[in-house]
Image (tube, rainbow over all chains, first blue to last red; front, top):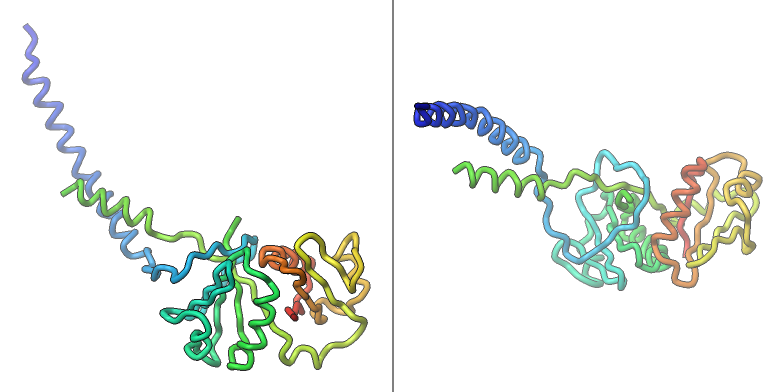
Length: 128
Length: 107
């Protein structure tokens, strides 16, 4: 007669022994993702940036001006024309504009930003 | 508990943004146009084609080389006829890969 009972208990025992290192690894991964995840605030308006192969910049400006496909503006909590009075002056500004936005509107925006003291403007793109 | 930990792990894996956004520096006409020198270099960007000084060109980079003395000479980019931003970014990328750095966006 074969002793199945003893066989099963030894197998279960070895499985319990294997799960502890696995939990360790999972905890390690969890801590890694907790540390590396940068909590990004949700985008105020839906934007699909233009695709390009441009290198990501090392230091991204704090402020990001969003421009939706229909040309509407959003900066932090302000919308529309009110953004111009809330933009940080004399600081670099990133623009996250939709790929369908009229480029002429962007060209018209730059002198307006320059008049406010915002001259260092970066256009954000995404990798294709 | 392990289930919860796994759930958190999956959440952070999905929520983490690994892809960094690319960045293209754009400059407006302020202060740059005083320093403009040499022959006109105006690129009209319409939704369907790109024109250098109003005429269609075969190879934009080669034609611009003949019009520039150095790679940081000012080159004017003018989007027309409601060209989408993607077109502008494509042209800027093309010119920057050709080595031109003095791109100025005008209206």
